[in-house]
Length: 414
Image (cartoon, rainbow, N blue to C red; front, top):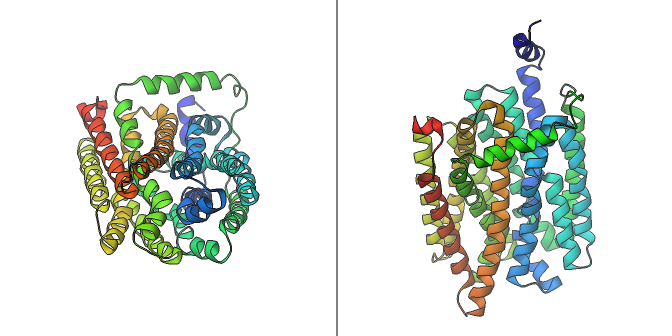
């Protein structure tokens, strides 16, 4: 058989469409758990602050640590996937999520609770990346946006868990009980992936030396002029939603508007439901590269406007804006499609890893930064939530400007 015929032969031997979907759904269980972990702080914030005597800035550090460790490991996880495969990478990493969750549940100090968050973030680091790489490798390119949108929607089930259900667990038990429940769910997800996901054994002859070329390719990708604009927007779009849903929504509703924890959980659940619906809907309305980029900028600015409005809104208007924000962030699936077309096919895995790294390091940065903003606002006797939400709005505008004004990919220029 000639080398040019090897790739088709592999595709012919690949699982059926039904088999591919079963494996993708199994991988999505891990992604769902990662979604749950990255949004637990909104329902646990009040109890965490009371038990450990945390400032708003310390609470921001706690929430940001998951995303920092998650984002920092993306490139290494991308290389691991290339060298060892999707299944092996996620099965090797995910036990750290279980260990981190158990450590968080029993942590006697704030420092150990933060370390637990770091372990959880490392364990979850490949959770979504394995899904995107699996889709890019196993599904037709024309289906990438729509299938990714479905996975983002299905993975959002984890957000549902950290709405009303987690609020009830925390209210009837404690924030520690919440981590124990999530640890049990993580064990189940690992078992599902172990049982259902199958892939050919990766070539091992050049596994060791391949790391250096992989790092060089990643460095070359970062040096491409159009990467800067992609990274600038990637760092703030998803981060804005997670900063609201995963950190500030609960305290905002409870402290500013007088909601109970369970009522706040109900609103978080509604936001999560709309966030499930957004990606599949936006994925169905993908466009050619140039038009897609115009839409990405437009929706980023609309999102910035919603955060500015939320900063001064009344109680029920705030609920409506938060719910609308959950749906609107579905346009982020277009950013994944933009990355898919902005780089050569040989760099798809690394490009996705760099994009995801920027996205989640951005989440960590925005959560930390908004914690600082809240602390400074309170010290100045200003409304902390107004300052936080306006800061997020400004970051979105700056990200959109960078995406629009910095160098564009060749697929847009020509």
